[in-house]
Image 1 (cartoon, helix red, strand yellow):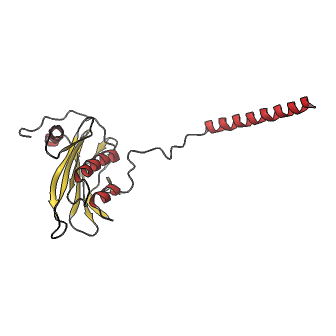
Image 2 (cartoon, rainbow, N blue to C red; image 1 turned 90 degrees about the horizontal axis):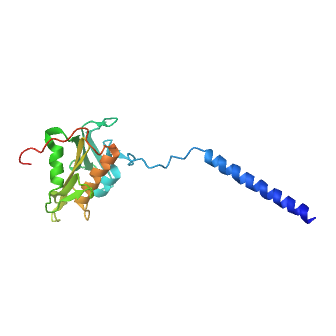
Image 3 (spheres, rainbow, N blue to C red; image 1 turned 90 degrees about the vertical axis):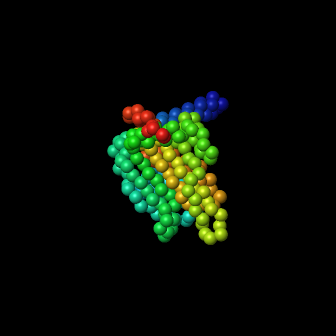
Length: 209
């Protein structure tokens, strides 16, 4: 009697093992789910087709922004020139201005790279490991009569054959305008998936730059 029960228990255990093994094999044969794989160009809603809206909303402290400009066309690794002028709400004043252009025009790429490595008061170089961009305090506006003037920021980022400039004219109260401009430049480079290295060397900076 004991042997018969033991044999039944062993058979049941073997069946369970086979079932689990078969299930595991089926799971292994399934194609991996890539729906949650991060996409470097996925930045949520974009203004002008290439500027992450969520970041700009935080920068200017407005519940809504609108942009006008030249949409960027992208063919493989080639990116056309583009710009974007962002306004807050129904306002007509530009709060953030973005430009993407060739780093090979008028030696501007090498000039910005040179400035990124020069130490200046208030200037922030980025990325930290190998700076190819910088941001610094610039511009200013008075939110309303009697209020303290807020200082904006300018950022320039050289990436591959392109450069990105950010003019943060109207930062929100309490925000670090310089850090925001640097972060937005890098986000746009990721959105456009700009390659790190240029296809041809940058020309030398123009005399005096």
